[in-house]
Length: 300
Length: 337
Image (cartoon, rainbow over all chains, first blue to last red; front, side, top):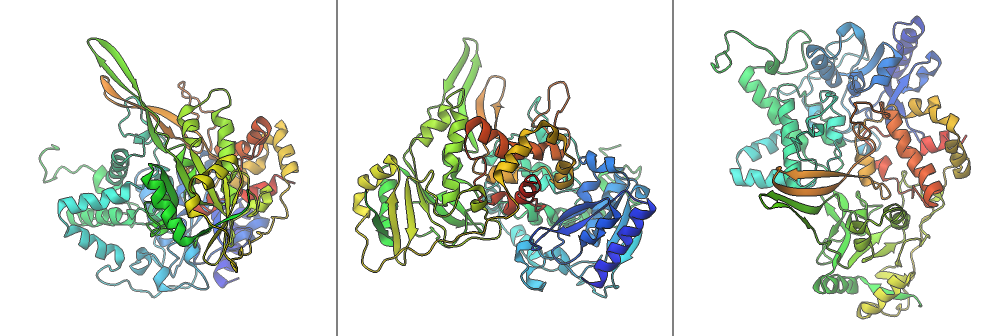
């Protein structure tokens, strides 16, 4: 057990014993101790189940949303969160989904995680880390109630780099037909399991647009037309909000490169509004604010 | 019928012959960095180094989406055009013995009170060529549900890997007829070709299917707090159900306008929050653990008691694919106590 885990368990125990929180949402091992899985600790005696390592890929902030009524029923939560996970909590706060004081954020300093748990063999090597980790500017978590771990001195590259960025450039240079074919090829594989939506803490709607069936706005069939409609509508709904946590791509059972869509959205919003989501819980995302000095006239 | 042998070369010929005679040949291929069952026209894309394909081959008889009929409304009235069910001979090659047991389970659902011809007509034409496993991974648990790489339930022809091909043991009449029809591809086993040893995955000690069944049969266990404790992490996607070889739920949806369109039968998942939503707005399964409990009960209580069939074949797909790593065997263990 590392020093971080020890500190984490002590903190969790203290929070539960004092009654400051009713549940600690964190990571724990499976039976074989080969993978980690989300755990909900309510008993101070069980805080030893908490772990923190490079397998801790899940963004646990989904459990703070209103979709998880039975988690909310337990009481005030503390959440074990990496910097990237905190970005999502920040968006939830700015969108009025969570009140800052209603969640205790245990920020974990992080040296990166694996892109998928099954890739991690002995130790974390750069090749198996997702692009977000290579460009991470929140290895020292930014919005927290307490921070666990030594300060990271990692500085992200000036210009974000990695496969996702290279691929985006490549797609941008394609003709419209080539782009259409590229995306159709990937979206055709979609099986409409909605893992992308379910793993996204910003997809917190209790009734998703695909579930509005009078009339049926988005065709639910997993045929190319329905798949394209679904993937595009989800992308649009995340514009200016997505923090590029990468959970949708990680969870996709058919390997659709959703990170390309999301990072493109992040770049577009950054260029248009000079805004990046997930950093400041007091700044509202551009798509939900109205400004009198908006340069576009249609809104006035 | 005695054992036959099919070399890798003859397998290639078999694939082209099946295709030429208008049949489908479905085999494990590599697609988007994962092994999946797909239709093939030649042997080139077929892979043999895999544990289990990501998808289940149930989709050859129960496609993810299909048109049941088309409708049109005009001045003359309503016309409904039923869609002919396209039931071609379909050969599934490389199925694992665990999964082969699943079509029988699906059969019992689709023929229970109503014969669902969209399923049965296709299933009748499916020939399953299973290949015994020489490898397994941590997620495999066939032996825990009383199956094993040696099982032949549901296989029409059981194949066993050798160095240069497969030894073929016809199991069912369908399998025997298949070997006869395509006898040119089969031969006597050459000298020196021996079955590779099958793996024997370790049984999970804490699981006792009888006790598990008893626990689930008792109504007082329906509200056991363990359900919530162990499964509230479920994120409510349909990855497990859509990969599962025995999950069979579907939804009927109309696509088109009020004047013309089609009625479709699409896969549905009991893990979705709207699955049980009533028109009144009431949802009897209002939290995720209740939905997970339903899926678990379906596998280990409803299937065995109502259909006397296997609800879970231990293929482990739901564990591999789960984005929150919810391990069904951990629940099986907890409910065996």
